[in-house]
Figure: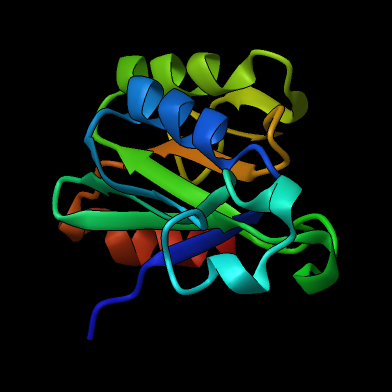
Length: 150
């Protein structure tokens, strides 16, 4: 089984994915508008140049999205966050900083008990992000840490 994240935007999918490619790396492998597809005839003329499907491939994983026309949208993204974990503090900070432009910071990057660096934000496109660094795990110490947290 492979799970992928699919985001719905209110008209700014192309700008969001161009930005995500710049910040996260990877490659945009699809950026299709409604125009020229069978969906075009079912889409309002002012919405036909909006994104029907976008795909950003990052290290074998997919982040997908589209622009949801107002009559097919349930409103802004509320209860889902895209979680990004990377091996180093510097990489986590770089990604967080890249997503932070125009964002609302929910939790600044800081050390936590589960990560050397972790932060949360809602970017200027309305996507909620959790960015963190993988915690080094000493398997011999794993039981002691679990006992400490209890």
